[in-house]
Length: 115
Image (cartoon, one colour):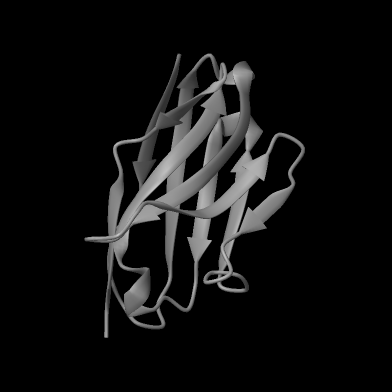
């Protein structure tokens, strides 16, 4: 089993920055990929960014060049640095991990960007 706990959400003005953190615990050696998803009201959950064990990353087109995903294996933590935030980035952000052939999710953290 894998447990994920996010932190770092909040309210920020457009153009501002936030950094989200996700600490993984449990059987972390089994984690293949970690990432961040988001879900805005009335919309489907979508991938924001992902990072593999080898450090390969991928991003949604809407956040490329603004967001950066990284991981600190010593701290079992994945980060999402979000710069140049826009009102359309407003959503609940969920940490995700894939392990044991299934998905694991954190509880979510709210990010609100005011115009």
